[in-house]
Image (cartoon, rainbow, N blue to C red; front, top):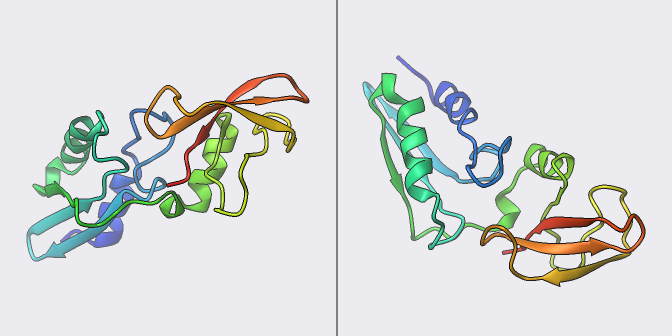
Length: 149
């Protein structure tokens, strides 16, 4: 019989389609995994209600868990927050050149490329709903940042 830990390991191979290299586990999108006898159920928490990647994420989760015949559903009654991104996810975001979401007390992210706090927001609208565009005044490079939700 499969365990919850094994299911979570499989889910760790499912990448966020908008941020390659970052898994849905690292993003904090896995709400609950239930294993009862021969039944596996996974609840996912969408990052945004209007996220265009939800169907693709569900398909990828179902494919990863196909040997277990898992039931996969999105829970819309549990709000996702950028606080759900785990430490490994935050490190991967920074390594990919995307500033991790900030604590509420900080208004602008450090540059993920050079580490400088001397940054400015260029646009609230990045390449996806969950990202904004910033500019580093020190290394003079643009970068993306995850929005704090």
